[in-house]
Length: 187
Image 1 (cartoon, rainbow, N blue to C red):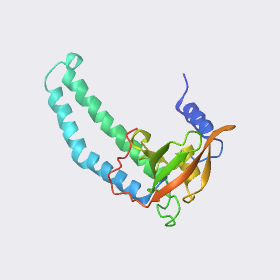
Image 2: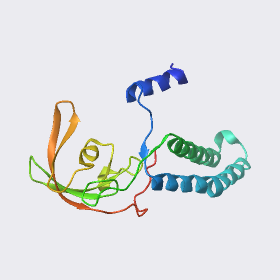
Image 3: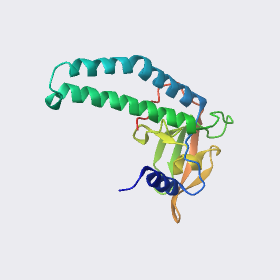
């Protein structure tokens, strides 16, 4: 069995030696995460503690499903608070501003895939809001990273891994903003 230090070393090696283990987040991301922490601490935590107390009062804890479910929810809330707090403490704050004609954070980009001519529309967001199933791609993903800083008409090579990749052409850039509708990811 690995100790906590061994697990951390393994994670650090996986990310790359000497590379910080932090995400690039905007001030808006951090603000929204702080709001979620505040809600979880001030509103949700007292309610969940009361649920545990109430379920505990029902008697035998070994067969008390309500107690175990309430305790699980309380622990899940505490875990989320710790996760968000760690993300904020280790974040590298980046700007969400970009030139009017360049792809940047929170811009919506229409691209054409060179291999088959199909088009897709994606919004470039930070890792905490990434959701590729809903057209939100992370600025740290291969496609997001490749598109940043490019202009309409540019053909961009996206490297998936060494020796493998594809080309896309930027057809349109919309200067959208983080209006709060993109949800902060769970874990």
